[in-house]
Length: 216
Length: 275
Image 1 (cartoon, helix red, strand yellow):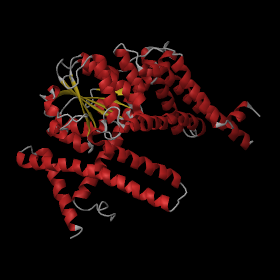
Image 2: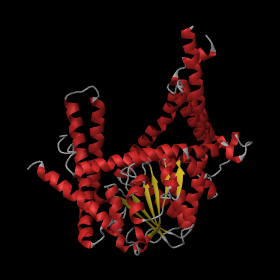
Image 3: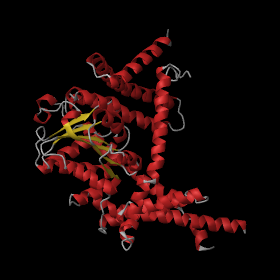
Image 4: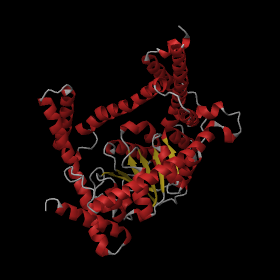
């Protein structure tokens, strides 16, 4: 019963939601709306559970003095400070001039931007050290990367300004994105969509059970 | 030791230094390279320009500070174009790191354009739930977002008076960095509720949007800072994206050069080891 009930609920809800896509009658749409609203509430609970799990895993690591425990301690302190300050400030925690807004503006935003900005340096370094053209395929990849990288910035058109408009780097890069890249991307998308549909069906039919406490 | 051998042993800190300088110098002394708007950028601009004045437009701004240099200029220019056209703008956020950032931008642009919050535009704030929220908005936006970012009851705001669900909007603008974002709007909203969508995404994501652009599910697309700069050019503005394009141009040239030099150095080393 412990397994059968969740499988039954999953199958019924899954089939009902598929039905609601095709049947707009209120006998179907009203319960479907309710289920979707419930999904939003469940996701909100998921955020709380995620925070609690993060706390548990990292507290354990700090207590056991694992190698990177000081970083975990900073994470726990940051998490607790943000949550406690948010709770003290209550409903208006996002208003101008609150401590929560200060944390967001002065700590979260600069750190988040800095992490992303570092990519520029590592991409340049990786391009020099790791992007090796050893095969024809790698050569084609490098050529496409070269053309798109230069074609997507103004300097690409500036250095090929003497060519007919269709041969300038901007136009060539747009063609690469629109034709060969698009064809490959669409194939991946269709494959992934079929995979998602198959997985969905497996879940609804109770074949795929890994979401039930890790059982296959 | 030849020049290529020395290059093969180059300390990566030199690469970091050159990258830093190539980004910094054009920001201080702009090169003002000419910008040519690409067709998807023109389509994005034209889609907004064809919205009748007074119509409602839904803007979903789903990004956090990491994507700020690319997506903030898009959001600012989009809001400016919409408010200049006297459109009624409703902003929502489905990305957890973005609500405060988006609220600051919305209030900034509204103040600069002389728009009245609550009458000309509203920020409904963040709602967790990803695709489920997108679908719920198709049933009722006031039920999905009963309060705006500042906690006001949305039913009391004049801008929300005629807003029920997606059918109340002439256009959906998705400015997104990842999940949930434009792809989910196309999959969950465009096919089901038939609302026209235009999108502004990061440069990394832009290629994955081309299938939707070609199929007409997206009416226009801004890809990365380049897309934002070209859009500013179409709006006859010189904003943050246009100023950043010189730096990005030089950085791209340097990365391309790194690929070439790295391979030359590697080949020279391999030849010497064989010999």
